[in-house]
Image 1 (cartoon, rainbow, N blue to C red):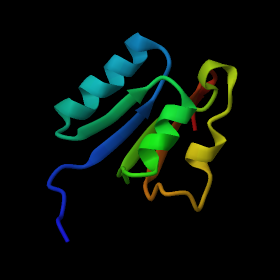
Image 2 (image 1 turned 120 degrees about the vertical axis):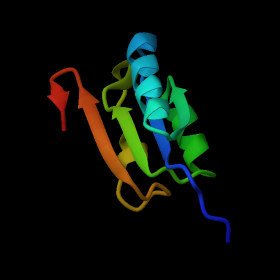
Image 3 (image 1 turned 180 degrees about the vertical axis):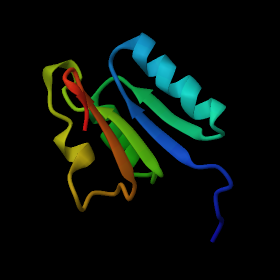
Image 4 (image 1 turned 60 degrees about the horizontal axis):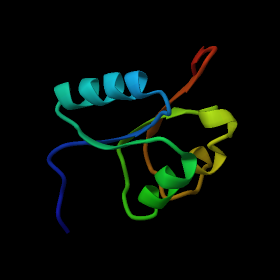
Length: 89
């Protein structure tokens, strides 16, 4: 089994400026980045193969809920930073 030397951060955000800010911060911290993904569907496809260490997800992405990406028991085994227009959760 191969071990990662860098953590992987999943970014799901439809605002390009915010997504780039998260991506730059993750890379500056030494992480690899999955995404940024603009839709829940594209993130869920990526999650079917990858297992990030941290996920930053806009839970109200394009007026749709990214419930599958944050549902317990899915393929993600990580901490979440959930963001909604009302703040961090």
